[in-house]
Every structure is written in C-alpha cells, then in structure tokens.
Image 1 (cartoon, rainbow, N blue to C red):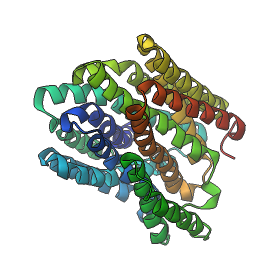
Image 2: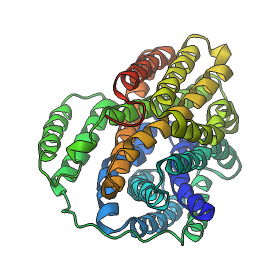
Image 3: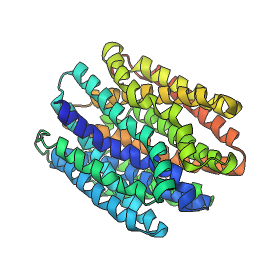
Length: 414
C-alpha cells in the first residue's frame, strides 16, 4: 500500500514541480513580463480549465486508466518541451497542463478507493500532499541550479524519469469500475473560454475580453443546473472558494517574489531557489502532521490556522523585507495546513461515485486562483510596487480564513 501511495503522490509531485521549477527560470526564458506571465499561465490555465473534465473522465473511464494516460503524456510532452523554442514552449506548456489535470483527480479517486476508512484516508491525503509538497521544495532550488548549469531546457528533462518512476510504483493501483456519465461539452468549452479570456484581459491590460469571459461564465453556470452537469450542485461549497484563494496567494506571491529577487535584488537563479527554501521546506513534511490533525479535529481549525499564517507571512514580507525568512516560513506552514484540510473536507464529503469530480473541482478552483494570482499580482507589482501587490494578497488570504471559520464545519464541508 505504501508503494502505491508513493506512486500516486509522485503524480501530483510532477504537477507541483512543473509549476515552481519554471518560476525561477522565467527571466532566462524571456526578458518581457508579458511573455513570462504566459509561459507561467500557459500551464496553469489549461490545468485549471480541464480539471473538472479530468475528474469526470476519471469517474467515467476509470481512475487507473486516466492516471496512467496522464503520466505517459506528461513524460512525452516534457521531452518535447526540452527541445522546443520559447515561442513553441507556450503551446507545449498548455498541453502539459492538460496532462497534469489528468493526474490530480484520478490520484485522489484512487486514494479514496484504496483507503475507505475516513481517518486513514485523511492520513493518506496528508502523505499525498507532503510528497507533492516536495515539488515546491525541489522546484525553485532545482530550477535555479539546472538553469545556471545546463540552461532552461534541463528543467523539463528532469520530469521524464520522475514520471517513469511514478508509473512503476503505481502499477498495483486498483481498477475502479467506470461509471457512465455524459460528457458535458458545453461546460468544458465555456469554462476554457471564460478562464482564458479573463486571463488575457488581466495580463494584456485590455477591457474587451471581459465581455466574452462574462458570457462564457454565465453559460457555464447555467449548464450546471442540469442533473447530469459536469459540476453537480451538491459539490459546490465554500471549500472551492477557499481553494481558489489559497493558490491565488501562493502562486501570485511566488511569481512576484521570483521577479523581485532576481530583477531588483540581483539574485542569480540558484540564489533565488535558496531564498524560497523557508517557504518550500514546510510543505514537504507539515502536511503529514496536518493529515493527522484533520483526522482528529476535522478540517476547520487547521484551515483557518493555515490561512491566518499565510496572511501574516505575506504581510510581513510586504512591510519588512529584512524579515523575509520568517515571512516565507509562515507562508509555507500556512499553505501546508490549509491545502490538506480543504482536500479532506471537499473530497471526504463527496459520495464515493463522485470522488474524482470532487477532487477535480477543488483543484480546478485552486488553479483558477493560481492563474488569477499570477495575472493580478503581476500587474499590480509592475504598475505600483511589490509591497502593494503582496499587501493585496494578504488581505485576500485573511478573507479566506474568515470564510473557512464561518462556513466549514468541524467534520467536513457544508
């Protein structure tokens, strides 16, 4: 069982690694802020947009088949990315986001099947989050070292052996019976249009894309009224909003600080990776503690504590850069408290037959928050100051903690 859990966790590790390993290498890929935002968001945009579909596919075709398809695709696309030009790389990053989307809800669904007892499932999800959290640890540091030593192409080569190892370890994954579900094309297309046009409007600082974004969002919401909708109404909760706020803060702060460390302070890529260690190290071990804590007291207290620590750390970073180590450590401990708590709340409250779509819904909301965090905080940092962008993130994270306190129950989701 430990072997299987490690293999499933490595799938999400790849997703996190490919997010953070690129962040440090962005100045080497392109000097333009807009290009840097699209190289970063090309991945998270499609990852967010296809997570709900990946969850539905996991339930429809079987989580094991979807997970293996995602792993093989991730390895192939990573190899192609290492050979691509920076312009082609944006498109390949978008395809990598689709492959990453296949890995997350399917691995959560397989964990839910392998660990039917709620307390054991909470601990397993803590391990899943901890192993994946090491992607945050390895990403900035490994990205900086590889970029300096071998160039930016090396950051994609490293994905291939990790994907092959995950494939070998997870061969014993249980075969979950497929569940007939209609593919909701209207919801999928409208979600992609809404998210991509909104991101384009924010990154390019233009108004007109907000119109198709609003129309597509209304189409998506209307489509969810059907009984066979891609996102069943009983899975919609405050936990999804909280997940979006977590990643808005985390991804936005990582993006802003990566540029600040290298372009303002003059750090080399490897030094930037080292500077992020106080944030990333807690995500490698603290989720295991969080999983045990959630199994004992429920998700509400750990979630509120996590948001509070994230808000305090971000605000300290904004007001007093000399306390950067303390600020980033608080942010790291906060992330590793909040995310496993929300995972347990959302997936644990879903019926077994909807475990895949529940995991996909939470991670879709999280990655939507990540896309908006990079776009919004990037614009604020370039248009005003890094401190103002970080303060904005701190206020939103505090609001996320308040929403968890008010709307998350002690034992699960409303």
